[in-house]
Image (tube, rainbow, N blue to C red; front, side, top):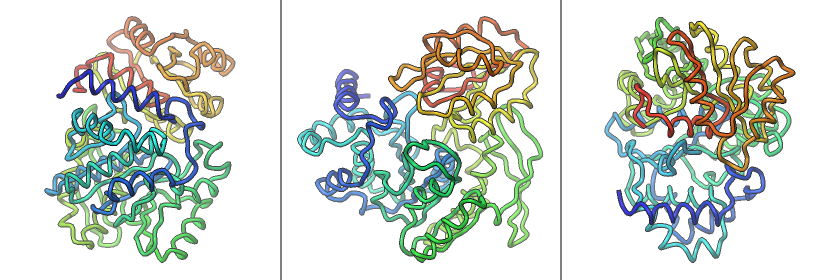
Length: 442
C-alpha cells in the first residue's frame, strides 16, 4: 500500500498547489492544450506510445468507458482506463485492468517531476492527464480508454489520436463554459473527432446531428450511430441485474444480455459499447458480440464502477446515483418512480454552477428531503438549497454534512421505505466513504 503519509502529502500538494475544477470551478480551467503538451513533451510524449479510445459526452461517458474497458479486459487485453472525477480515492482515476495505480507510483511520479510541475504550473486535471498517460505508456497497455473531463475540443485529454472517438450524448451542462445551445455544446464535444478516425454517436438529436455530420465530413471521419445499429428490450430487472433481448438491426441477430449496469439509461451506453466492439474488431482486436455480452454481466466487478443507479442496500432500499444535471436527473427520477416504497426519502446536494431551479423542478413533491452540501468549496450551501427547494414544494431539513443527512434519513426509515442519494459525484462519494453498505465493497 505504500507510505500512507507520503501519499497523503502528495495529494495535498496536488490539491493545494494546482487549481482544481471540481473544487473551485471555472477558475481552474486552462482554455487550451499548451500545458498538457508541455508536460507530455517533457515526459517523452507517452500518449503516442499506446493505442486508445477517446470518449466525450454530457452524460454516460463514465459508464461507457468502464463498460468498454471491461469488454477489452475480459478479452485478455491489458487495458488502461482514465476517468474523472473520483468518488473516494484519487487513484480511481487511473486504472490498469480494473486495479488503481499504486500510491507509491503516484508519490514517485510527483516527486520526480516536481520541478516540471512548478515550471509549467498546470491545473490539477492537466497533471492528472499527463500522469495517466505516463503510467499507461510505462505499463505498455494494449489499449487505454480515455474519458474527457469537460467538453472535448480544449479538454486536456484531446492531445491523443485514438483508434476510435465516441460521443455518448449532448445535453445541457456547464453552459457558462460550453455554450447555451445544444449545437454549441455539440461543437465543443465534436472537437475530439480526428482525421480519418471513426466516430460513434451514442444518442441522436435533431439539434446536434448537423454539427456532427459537418465535423465528420471535414475530418473524413466515418460516423456510426449506435441507436440505429442496435435495439434493446428489457425483459427483467432486480437489485443486481437487468436482462435484455438485444437485436443487431443490420444482421437481424438476437441475443440475451444480462448486465450489472442497472440504470434505465444504461441501454444507450450498452448500444454504444457494442458498436465500439464491432469497430475495434475491424482494427485488429479479437472482440466478439458474445464475448462483449459476457463481459457486460460484470462491469462493476471488473472495473470497480460505482455510483450509477447503485443499490447500496435492501430492506430498506438505499440507491445512489451521481446524476448532476437536468438530463441525467430526469432519467434517474423517472426510474425512481418505479421503486416501490411506503415513504420515499431523498438526500440531495448540488454544486453552485448547476441549473438548480430546473433540476429541482424534476424532483417529486411527495418525498422527504435531506438537503446537504459536500465538503468542497464549490458546494451549494445546504440551507441555500433548502430555501430554493421550498417554493417548489420540496420539504425537508438542511444538514451541514452528507454524513449527517444520510444518518438522519436512515434513522427515519422503516424497512418498507426507500432512500435515493443524488445530485453530484461529491454527495455520492461522501455517502459511499462513510457507509460500508451490505451490497457494496468500496
